[in-house]
Image (cartoon, rainbow, N blue to C red; front, top):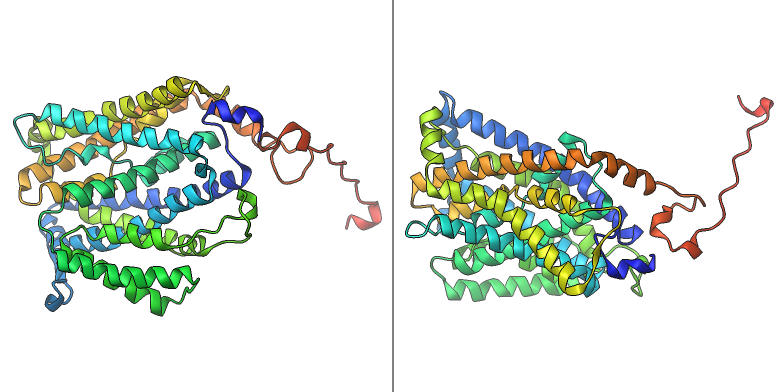
Length: 449
């Protein structure tokens, strides 16, 4: 890497990291498209003459009642399927901080600060709009949905630079993990301490096996399921189990990332297997069961838009995220004296911050926890999430499309490989770039056939 990377914000990072991020984002983009489809079907169905059938399906209960697991399909999606989502997010975060570029504190500071700012400011805005009223949903506008954001990027066909895509992915993962901490601490209504302590036993057994590099599903899956079930019984939201299980999985630091070992570790194995399930099934199904809010026509929509809960969520997602992420980035720049990469401007940071305002999956999850006993606030909050996400998407699209010509130039630079060694020259120090590869000689006429 060029030496300037130590004083630059949003530099490209290493080539292995860029390759890994590109692979992750391709899968998440497909998942984002499926998420959009699931949410659209739910909205149309919930506002159609067959709305009762949607509600009946969402509220249908399945599972063993003896184990207190006779849950509705909507609850299974929120508590069960999202545990897979948070397991993958936990693996991603651990891999970033153990073997990725974020193991360097100077690189980790920016996405962590941006995630904190992007959660704190929207929460503050929600509280300001709801002083003297319902504050249970203060954390709703704090989330960033990476799949939704990538789906929007795919739709508007912007050539967002690798550095910004990497930052967006890392920001969203840190945001998700902070959100699950908020859920565990602030949205646990009643704590069953014996069940919580019992959940540590299968968790420890799972951790012992994975540390021994055992990947047999018939051993690991029952332990993971038991950990989840006991966590659910404890009163702590069951998705927390997914994060804790992920943190026990070892990450191998490959030779490319500076570690002593080579080859993929167990975390990479699990992530490769489970990310398609998370992005392609778990999150879209959750969106289907959670996004179906009855708008009640223009009058019902107007009523929701006049509610301080919906307004606080919308302003928090759009203005709060933009101010929080951009402000935190500026503070990191101010106090570390780091400068933006020469290819980027603060306009790009604002566009990315607005894209971070697409809080969908985790926002809906927090809504279900905050207003489970208040159907009217529950519906108003969902309207705020949907409209706030759309406004954030439109605003981000306008800014990023304006800058797309510059992004195309950066993308072209990132493809140049003069010495044909398989590593684009921008990821190598000047002294590591070899001489230009010799041109290929044309085949003689008799061999061309």
